Image (cartoon, rainbow, N blue to C red; front, side):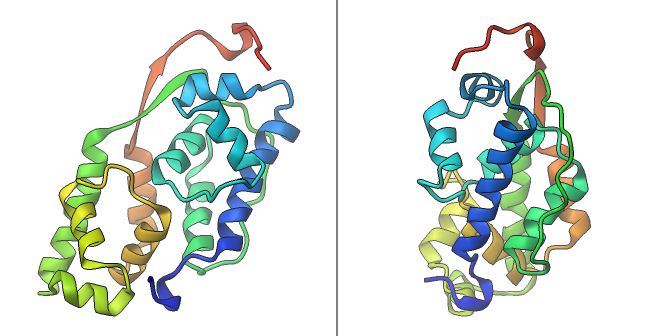
Length: 196
């Protein structure tokens, strides 16, 4: 179990759920779940469960895809990290946001660089997997699966624990966000048929 000082609070994940739910339902009321799914590749039923708080917002890929789709600024994305790592208790203020009409995909190389970063930091500190486990509580096996890419989906809980442990900077978070996404042009949202 991840130790308290490195753990993500359930309530903070809930705040992110509510943030994205309000973006779609309040600020973009004509935007359907099917349309969000079309552009992000996230299953509509999965988005629905997140919006209804029926599951944890504990996925790096979903956070990246929705953040890019809603065209969130670097500062807004950084506020997620600050919230989850408890550097700040508030999300960046919401504003009227216009979703992108592009297919959102995560660059494979960006996740590889993230994994390489964790390996490099652990090597620089001359730490074994077991040593990191003792410090933060994330199991050595889970750390290894993240470092080797065996764990295809990185959980936010694991990511925040490792990022806090390795003292990841705000500029590194922003750089990752700016370079993690590929966008492919598709039909405009305005011209797509709304499906509810």
